[in-house]
Length: 99
Image (cartoon, rainbow, N blue to C red; front, top):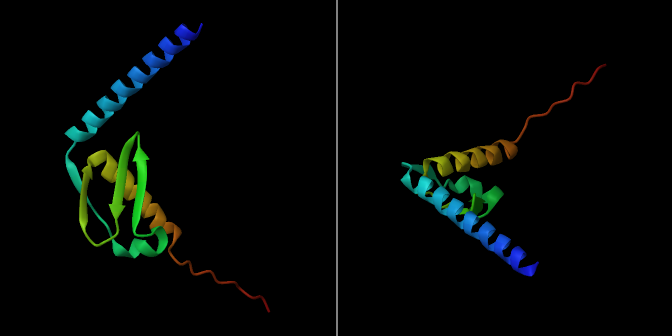
């Protein structure tokens, strides 16, 4: 029983590694797109922001420089930065007072 389990885990790991390599190859073949590391994000996200995109590590520094990413990663990163900007934009909330 242990041997079957070990074989199954080994096959699972091998498949995972093949799939991961295929994803990385696909991303590497994509055109590179610049994303601006706007220093305005520092207040809300810190000096850097990082996440994993299907085991592909993504890091951006908010130092006023452009960073190149595969197109798919750049689009995902820009969505995350846009959401952070929308979530941290001051909202003008006023209440009406009925007299």
